[in-house]
Length: 290
Image (cartoon, rainbow, N blue to C red; front, side):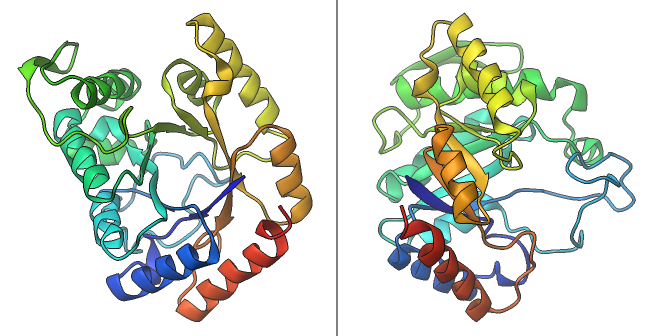
């Protein structure tokens, strides 16, 4: 079983000094990975419904710091040796996949193969409008971008002819350090996300799923994988946060290969000591017992 921390690049402790201290502490405590979150902008007065709350609003202040996840990971990678660096998630349809392929390949090469790339389709229409990407195209753009990333990471001369991206013998180096490219984990806990993971994902990260809501999502994943001739067991399952040993054991029984410690959310920690205490508490009550 692997254990990760979510989320490290949000709020008062997302600056360089606390981020490095917390990540190094987690690495020494035996955590396999640390994960980031993304919003480029949050337009004031947005009307889109946040899908993870009853009132459709964020459950934390919208003015929190959200450092760009890839830049944050680059800083942290240079100060650590073993801990993997994940995104949970990058809003993939908002990004140019060709530029993104180069950024991720560079980060993976310079971190000796420690990047885990979690992606989602996004929910905040006003953010898409600010960036200039049609909100209604986000699912199609996500699926195509995953293909573009893999072609650029795999092929020395990458060619691709899609709806949104065309490449003709494009050369992009360096390649990722990981032989099969950066693993792509599909985030989200909707049936559509589970199906996308089954069709296209190296992993599935339904961050909000509980031991009760995970089984139907895994059933969707399995069906989608089998329909395209994939082995469902090849998709690595990352469970959401475990708040006790009983919950962690249930996730493990369901086939989860990674369990998360909720580092910054739902609590908005403002003290490095509190973050370390949370990490140490999770290690002693859950990790050590595995």
